[in-house]
Length: 244
Image (cartoon, rainbow, N blue to C red; front, side):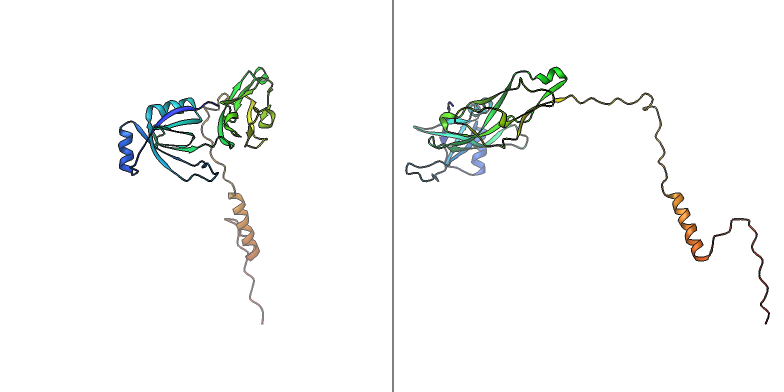
């Protein structure tokens, strides 16, 4: 993988007001951290920088992974670890760079490029992309610019998984081998409304449970004192007094 040059300048002011001033001058605040020293120990030095807004935009557009940061006469190979944008996602507010040790494997996300025409398209399907980037581990010299995936053999309802593709030499995928990269699915048909269905007025909701409540009420009355006589029915004659 090739590195892309990016000029950076040191900054000593680290407050919010200074960061706002740098942005107004067409510069983006940034930090550089990580990496290892010559003796193999972790490098805890953090460099506070600014980079050109226009040059950074070009790198982001090219999806550049490895950056050759030129800080005065010093050069540092780094990757863009994090890019912070405004709430609308339009402007870059801050960038985090991480130093790269060329003797140790890198963990980077590489773009996945799909080429070809799946067989399933002729069977009424359409290509569905599941992954646009792939997390990999590789040495600096083995990191590819992208991963090319051939989709020609995929038939209708077929799924191409990570385990089904061959990665470049020296490249190890960090994702689950069973994870799907792409698939070919049948197009979803929209069900048209039946003729006259749109003209029909709204149906009145069915009253559920009204009759059952009445029946339950009658049952309770009968259990306590017999069935309630119907309206207009003759009352039973009173029994005579008991003879002493």
